[in-house]
Image (tube, rainbow, N blue to C red; front, side, top):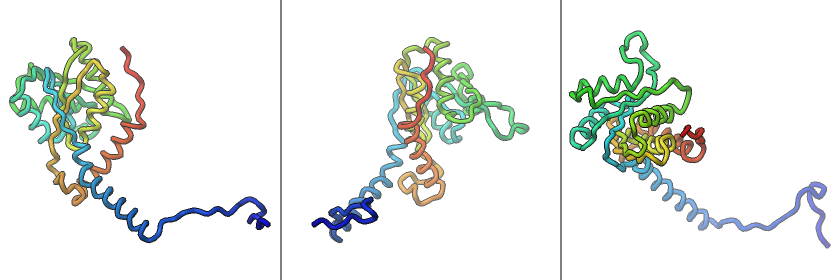
Amino acid sequence: MNSPKPFFGLLQRRQCIVPTWRGWLLLLLAFGTAGVLFVRNIYGFLAVNDPLPGDILVIEGWSSDYVIESAVEDFRKSQYKRICLTGGPIDFGNVMREHKTFAEYGKAMCLKLGLPADVLHTVPAPAVEKDRSYASALALRQWLREHGGTDVKINIAGNGAHSRRTRLVYEKALGPGVHVGISTIAEQGFDPNRWWKTSQGFRTVVDETIAYAYARFFFSPPKPQP
């Protein structure tokens, strides 16, 4: 005879299999190993280095000084014909600064580093509340259309752990007609191989991991007009 079901028949008993202590130990070991591998390899994944030298080198004007300096050296050594400086309005120090956008600031720095003005092209983006990299990429897309760049190769000067997300966002905005490469420039504020040892490294990698996951799986921008 079946025993009555508990709680007035709303629940029923079922047998289930649970790990033994050896099973729990094995699971703990597996998760621990996966965690160690993730920590040691996530920076290398985010800081992708996949250069595609072509006609245009793209420098994001908000980049750190050492990134812009390294990009200028890359321009001098390679066969680029033009540099496009991207970036939207600078939202701090309005009274003290002469440059209104990061694109203008990036160009001014390249001029200070000795590049001729005729190879530098500012591509300012409009002010937006979010998805600033995407807005910069859309501005570059419009600039390429206006300058005959319907089938072109560009290479972006990557900002360390920001690089993979940068390339992904530019690919989404520019479309299949533009081939996007990226040359990452390693962080100088912390050791990429020990990023978890410093607060700056921890914040950078954790923030970029979350941001890349959002851009890859959840960000659905409107399709650019043809």
